[in-house]
Length: 396
Image (cartoon, rainbow, N blue to C red; front, side, top):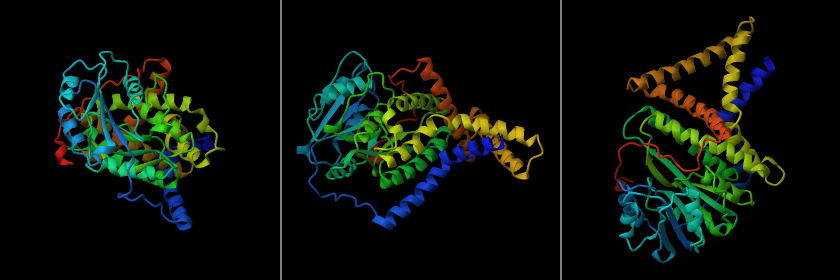
């Protein structure tokens, strides 16, 4: 029982903190042996590029998104803008059609985002394709910063950074903002070591010649598209200076809805990316994939429950004092999460308690997402989460 306890505790620690610590030291070793990776110069000859925006019933934000898009820095003769509005039943297509600089692809039928993207890719003939969401706003140099990396023929995809705008502290903003700052750091180190493990749909790009269609029921299309490119032996680069800003979820219930969907997509992706479980072809990618994604999306949330229960049983058997210390730490952490939940329901804002609360919600979402996926109740179509009041893109 004690062996199982320490093994489970190690995996939980490694998943959330240990991998980051190990990654830090691996980066230090790599820099000492090979030097820091060279970032391509901004003044090089940039590739032709198409920016694709998939929008579904976004009439409240679409004009601001268009304004943001038209002000992006990139050579006009090399840039194409394509908006897809399949299934939109509001004024979104009509508002987009008023801009001659943008090509609009609209279909009255809603078949899901990935179906729309596949349809759009048949119309694309540029060297690079950048995908971004309709409810996010890019900084002015985002496209240039992303495109420069394709000067390296080993680069197959480039992911930008997601930034969560926090206009006020809430249960969602405190946890989500902290989580993404930590994730951003891990992605920087992943990218420098070898490759980012997947891309965020808010802002990512691919080399068009490497694009592969994913199955129409794919839940995490951005993750699958990028990892299929990594599976071909190409690196996914992380460019933190190219970022997409979006407002946090309106509340933790909305954030949970989004996380459950991501978790369902995570287990689906793991089951479909079977080649990545073999370490022989790309051992570094395999190591990063297992450490950064697979453990989080499969066994670790269950191990958290297992470790707590086993720790409690061991404490009933007069064990060494260390077991009482670990148990006390777990009780305090989960009590903080419970307090965060209670305060959230009462609209009381104590940021320190929202971090353990968000952490527990995130891991509960994995369990719920796995259950939803195997029950077959998770649709590939996005169910939009409510977010905070819109902000002006010129603030970027």
